Image 1: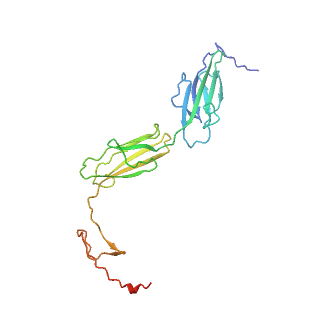
Image 2: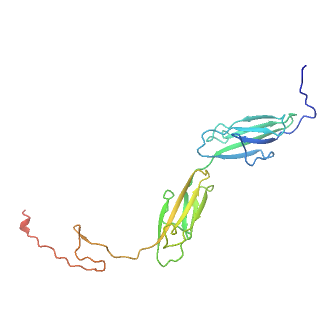
Image 3: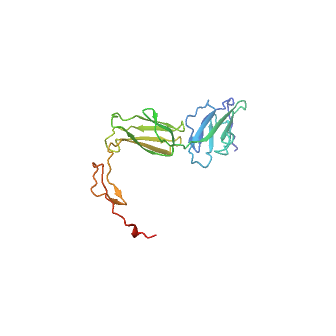
Length: 231
């Protein structure tokens, strides 16, 4: 006996998708009536993700043209999914544009109570900030990321005179690519008020009788006989 599969009913006019898969995983945020998607992948990604799709109607035709590059033109970075309904009267084209995540985790600026941090450099991560002892409130640290897509989290310092941890504000910057981050620190302290010396050296030898609170010294130099240095 020969068996034949016969489809009954009116051919479907549905050209929508039921899901889109990126390297086998469902595309987050997919909606059948949303045709265009932008997918960010890690900056370390080498291979172009493979796109697959499942039609809402099992008899619809799906043709996928894969993206060819992650660093080329938008057209080269775009996968195209063309869906034709079973009755061949309707066609929908879905696109998936791939973008590499920005891995810039640097800061563009640090401010203390709204004033730019003196000597700030995006490549320098640690700073020492000295203030007069008349200042009682620890300055509030703010920061701006170079890349607007980066996330900045700040743990404020709580003291001028506590432990180093208590005196240090920590700024953590996570780039758009969450695998890349930088941590900046600003450690606060009071300016020193001690203007005394700890030693005076004469020809490399400590001055006899030196004291930090003694400000004037009389030094008797040995008389030199010119005959000791013949011409």
